[in-house]
Image (cartoon, rainbow, N blue to C red; front, side, top):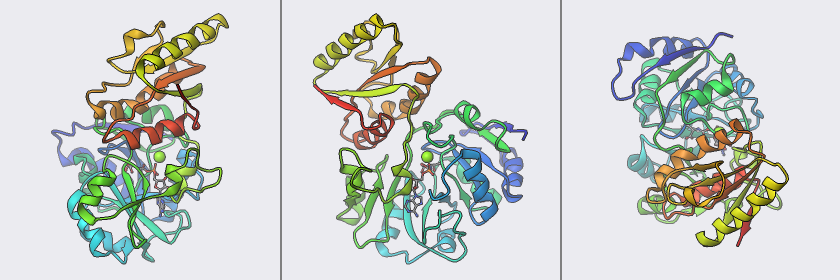
Length: 351
Ligand code: TXA
Ligand code: MG
C-alpha cells in the first residue's frame, strides 16, 4: 500500500488540507492523525471492516477495544447509552480534552470496534486538527495509538512512519504532540467512577467535579497480571517496551547515580551496550556518553512529553541494558510511572 503524507500546521491550517483525509475515512480507509495526547490511527468506528483493518495494521489482538473519537457532544448518544449526570459533569469539565469515558454501547457500534465488549470508550480530543478531521469528515473515528502493538506510542509523525509505513493510507503530520501520554480512562458504568488508565487528567481533578473516584486495583498492584486482571484489556499487554532490558532505579538521587555508575562499569567490562535515562538536571553526573535526558524535573510535563521518544531512541542506539531514574512527580507521576513500569516489565530496584 502507498502511504501518503499531509503536513498540517495545527496553529494555522485550512480545512481543505484535510479533504483527502476525510475522503479516505469516508471510504473506509485508515488515517493517522495528531491528538493532544499521542498520534491516533483512525478509521470509521461504525464500520466493522474499518475496525478490522485497524487491528491488522497495528498487529493488535482483536479483543483489545478501540476508543471512539467524537467531535460534537450529540454524537455521544449515537454510540453510548445510560449517560448520567456524573458523566455529563465530567464532559462539561474536560471535553474536548484528554479524558476517555466508558459507557454501555448502543447497537450502532459494531463489536469489532469494542473488542467484543458491550461497553464503549469515547473521547472528544482537543487537538484542532483532530477535531476538524472528525467534524469535517462526519465520521466517528475509532483510534488506538498509531504504533505497532507493543511499541511505545507515537508522539510525532516520524514515529508513525517507523511503524506503519505502507500499512495505512495517509499520515497527517501535525508536528510533536503536546502531552505525550495517552488519555485518562474512566469507567462510568460503575456506581462510583473507576480510573482504568491514569493520564493527564488526574484523580484529584476528577474528584473536584464528581466527588469520590476509585482506581482499578490492578493499577495499584506491584505487578498486575499475576493475581489481578486490569479492567481495560489493553493494560494487560506488554507495552511501550524497548528491545533492551529496562530497569527503573528508585531512591535518593545521590544513591541512584552512584548505583547506576557502578553498573555501567560492569557492563563496559563485559563489552555490553548500556544507556541511562536521566534528566536535564542529572545527565552530567553519569560516566557514559550514552546518557539521554527525558526532560526537566522542574516541569513534569516535559518528562511526559519526552517519554515515548526516549524509549524509541533506546532501540535506535541499540541499547542492550537501560537504566532509568524514577520520575515520581506530584501531578503526572502516576501516569508517567504507570507507563515506565510497563515498559520495564515491572523491573524496578529500590536503593
Ligand atoms: O489518548 C488516547 O486515548 C489515544 C489517542 C489516539 O486518542 N488513544 C489510545 O488508544 O490510547 P489505545 O487503543 O492505544 O488505548 C485504548 C485503551 C486500551 O487499553 C483499551 O483496552 C481500553 O482503552 N479500552 C477501550 N475500550 C474499552 C472498554 N470498553 N472497556 C475497557 N477498556 C477499554
Ligand atoms: Mg496504545
